[in-house]
Length: 164
Figure (cartoon, rainbow, N blue to C red):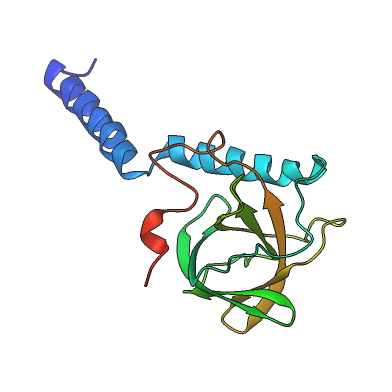
């Protein structure tokens, strides 16, 4: 049987790990929320009138890009002949995303882009491209409210990535 001191040390260490990670937006809870939320976003393509056929009217200069259940990056956005070109500042680890989804809030303002591995949603129109290094992948769009899908401690699209 372990000593009382050893038991207290292990409990204190576990408490520090759990409590220390959560306020910074890290840890198991954020990972589960990020995965479940990203899946729920993809489900929105099955809801009538949620899928965008054109890019949002207002083109922000910068936008957060979250790799589904992974890190977030800053990106630059510009409008070109093919729609929005969202260029990542940084390089996601393997596996590389296969498509991106611009998430637009009910107010019509782009919140950010979620990048997913695999093939794009088959019936969704392409409204632009997501650029990562020399790779271009399709960019789709959804109008939905992410507030109920994310944890305030670990948002999909951190405000800190919206500027230079």
